[in-house]
Length: 297
Image (cartoon, rainbow, N blue to C red):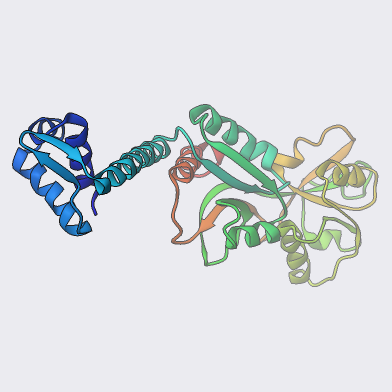
């Protein structure tokens, strides 16, 4: 049973005859007659009682007409809803963002996206990279802001590349250095983020490559608190430069980390080969448009 034949049948009933229905569906009278006959053959029941130039619905015809009208209306509603999705008048975008860098990198992008597509509902979750990777893997979010390296099961768009900055109290013996190597900080305890943050792995792996296992004195998930602790002399913390430069409330030394393999590279990842909704494609377009402004050429 096809929508085309149902439409022809409904219009025959509505218009009171085959010739009038043919004009409405832009077909010949013969085509409309064949469509109705096809329905009757398929159902094995007469749908119309033909009385000369007049028609009357049979009992089966009344049932089919009532259901067909609803089916055709549902089809039209479906077509309109899908058209709204394609036109980004409705839909949803599920983003997983990291605590580090989101306010600087992604808040302006989310605001711009909202201005462009006010009908799209934006749902945000905030976690460290490990949990965001798992949420993305299980399709609970559409995109995740994560640090390189990216698992092979994901595609990604680069967003920002920054050197790491060491945060030290202003009277630390190394506070006047223009740059630091991790080996210079061998005897300084580290202030790290909570477990699950990819930045921790970058720092700890680099310390091991430099030949030492660091002492970790404090862990926190709060950037401002970590910066305050570093400024108070509890140890050295590390942040990407664009985030560290915003920490000016406490006297603190900000020194670029000159250490291979410690660049902070943020990317937006999505499942490789997964269906990308119109809302998701629009988000990816916006990311690519902003790439140059975020430091990529």
